[in-house]
Length: 96
Image 1 (cartoon, helix red, strand yellow):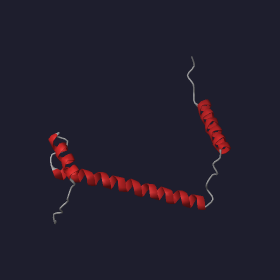
Image 2 (cartoon, rainbow, N blue to C red):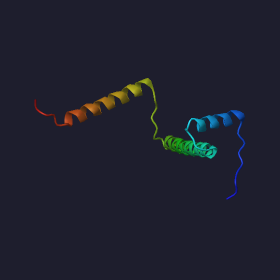
Image 3 (cartoon, rainbow, N blue to C red):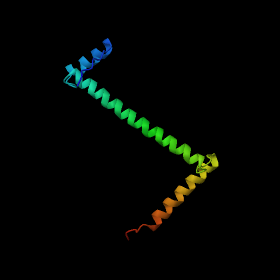
């Protein structure tokens, strides 16, 4: 494996040195590894979000969307409340 050289800004170097001095990191390489792990996680999340947006757009294109208005939000809230009340009514209640 070929080594890679990374140039840090003076502020980044100071930040890494402080993390090592405080015991947060053991080596400079740990800072790079942690930064790459966080970047990978962020990129995976970004890809998941983009896929969800693509799916939402496809759903809308198929006519599966819902028009959002103040009234539709009130109707949705009423629907959710009604389902919750029905679920509560169906649960067994201990006798007192």
